[in-house]
Length: 261
Image (tube, rainbow, N blue to C red; front, side, top):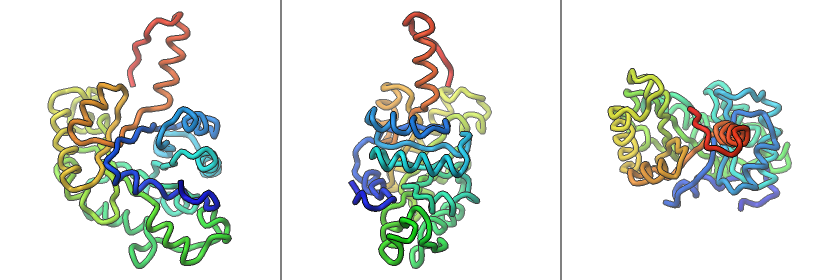
């Protein structure tokens, strides 16, 4: 584990390069307790979902503290304008939705890394730098080495250039969002439609061929097996899906509940 004195957990880039499968989940619930529960359950990472979740910046920072205290790697899915504040809070990585071009991926990579690697603005009074206790050149180097960038591709246009996006310096992983991809392709929420699955296969193989870590939603062991055979190694489930399914099963006397993600 990264030296626990530092608020920033910098393990993720090496984990993504390791070749080993990683298992985590999206969490949109504004609760540090959920973060702790996911850590104690044994997940490798948690994606704090600031795209679809309801946490404000203050709650996001508390969830980052919970992640650091329990040893789970915290990633934040957020929009581009929120990047500076999310990084200064101490996120281990950011996962940015709707990346569709090489130019966009390069711009985001530059925003995530300090000069001379990128163009991130420098401040050492933040949580990520220990409120000044761990600032300076050491914090700059730890951040450039240890903060990950996961680009999300969710449209046919992005799938077509998946390999090129993955090859951008500063991109550590590329995650295919199957639900948005299915909608963009005209199949609604049916990401199991054959053309959508073909696009996912094309994207995963292109990302792997570029030498970066491919990611995908995996709600079942069968999903992991199927997408793993295509190169995926960064698998994300969904906390609310897991919780709701467990609650529905309990409410139905232990019978298997059929729910839609």
